[in-house]
Length: 296
Length: 322
Image 1 (cartoon, each protein chain N blue to C red):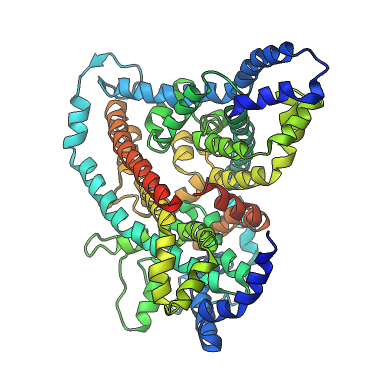
Image 2: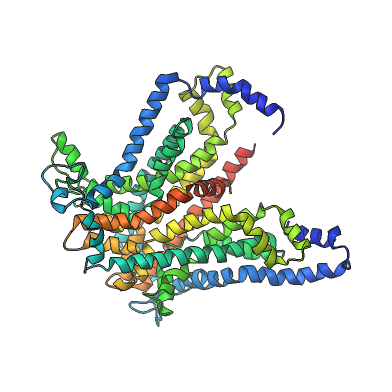
């Protein structure tokens, strides 16, 4: 920010090129080859999904390895929906409902709590905060047995309530929001207070609209986790009508008859919305991880 | 910190028209109400869905509770004895240890390596970063499916068997046979693929925070770029991030369930703690008593790890600030 900074950068630019990017053209070629090979390896699983989803089973299981389908089987797209053994459409819909409500609920509940802990003065606020911190020591995955016991005695097995509500009270997300709000500029809130807004009004009209980047980052992470969750939906979804798409995919693997192209088409359909969400929101996601991950 | 905010507001010249004491007193009562208004929903849920289950499971762990959650027969520490002498449960802890010994260093090295590569790119940097980061969007179930049905399929048309076939090697039953334990290759690579990109982002952020001047000073002192600067500048500067990443990886490995459950559904080998717990509590016996005792034991174990983590991360920070 100081005036010397740009000068310094100008002076060091050639030096930087020599020391850090060293090796010139040859080094650069090597660097790009290494990165390119790694990238290709990382893309192999995606390639396999698409390949298998658009082939016939005869080609997939054929004598000779085929890199691409001889003719693309677009008809495979509808097959998971016509399958009678697994209600794929229902499981996909369950996942949409669960992931959307999970994300909305967590954002609403945990952000408010985080704001309360960060900014509203209260004598016992510290004690409350320590109680929240204590829950971070116990990962929810390890306590699925007692949680299941509780949810089943509430009669919430096989229901959206059972799938969604127990996961909404994430101590970690609350903690992330608290850390974020501690760094939120106080002047903005004070201005809102001067304009006659209480905590509630200041929060909704000033704090939230000015924190959308952070909300977007948390929303993306939460949505991905909600869509991809497996253990809890497996425990709660005893009846196939309550399966999420992950539980449905898992059931394909243990079925008696294996229908490769159908299974991979179903996998492709289950991943596609997420890949779009991911590519579209990646910027906020990367920011959010860099902000909250370690430096927090 | 937060109390100063309200005082600041109360004393704010802009609100000077109101008498001095009133708004302050009003705000204190007001702020207690607001505190509960904001945190109440969360805290209520936290008590019901986190604290109550933990308490209940401690209670259940002292009772004979099969197929019921309201048991009447008190059995003392029998469930704990049963769990700790259970060969399957102890084996699951061994499985976790082996798994962690593979996956933690592998992910650390892979994510750091990718971060170093991406950090040096000048063109197409965002593209490559996205490629390595993309698997984060894929679920463990979907990835396990690809690994089991396509890459490490034990039959002839699996990708790996096709590739080794080009070199004249016979088909390998990757998952169906614990001897030789090829299943570890499958289990470790699937998680490596899924999580490396995420930790790469952490390392990238940390790499960009290393002051350029350090490298310039080293260059002036005659350090060769490459191994020397990596060993004596980059690696020490990444120490705090590395420590945190390793502990995050350890805790994640401890909770591994999805890929084991889907890759080795009928196996008696390679079962981690959470899968054993699942079988015990939700399998044929529905033994909630023993399952709860297992949950308590695993929770205590992870608490030890987390406390240890707090200590180490505390040290890491202290050194960084020096």
